[in-house]
Image (tube, rainbow, N blue to C red):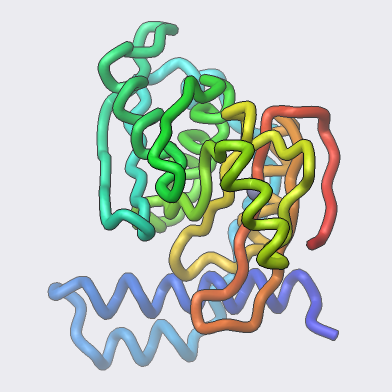
Length: 213
Ligand SMILES: [Zn+2]
């Protein structure tokens, strides 16, 4: 049984390895050192409640990637307490139903969760774009997923523009899901998978709850 600490440590090491391999300034000898050294996980990695007010009031830039359509959007979408409409529209487009080719108004609270998650892990050097595997879903698309045996609820919040399935490269879903849970902003589903890319996390702005799927 893998403990949470082991998983976390593995994630941190993976991230450290990824960072070092993309940083030209650091030679391979240093990268080897980093892998073998005992990197202690930051003590508050799971506890976003320890964040100070500064974190929440600063301008917010979000960096999203949509593997299904090969699109990426990095944009300032919120400042001075307000969402920037043009950026909001672009974010709704990125989270559209790629299969049904339809977009919808996405709950701004969902963008807050996505942004906060990304901004939080960026503090630890994890600055890759956040992957959106699924955002808004038309009822037809949702039904099709159920028919194909993909885990999807019949009354999925994806159909209300209130949910997204996400992944952050090199970050274990246990770590990602625990962080999102600590924001206490809605539901969190943990989808563990053994594939090369790992699993994903469902996050929504509905009632606070969590499950494994
Ligand atoms: Zn989902």
